[in-house]
View 1 (cartoon, rainbow, N blue to C red):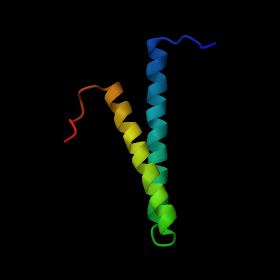
View 2 (cartoon, rainbow, N blue to C red):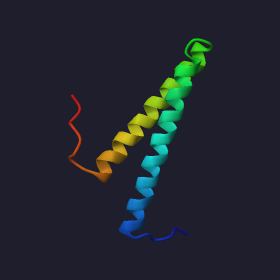
View 3 (cartoon, rainbow, N blue to C red):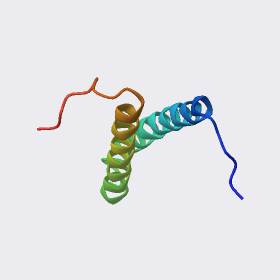
Length: 73
């Protein structure tokens, strides 16, 4: 059975998710840069994960602050 949450709790959860995604994005970006010369394949994997987290952050930013972000080209 699912719990019912109010809008304030939903907002807090989305903000926590955005903060978590930002931290993961930084972690994977650093890993990609570190591995670039020693393990190119792992660096590419880390770069893909970085892009995935960047996308999640963009979506959550738009949900949490609609209209404050430029339209994609």
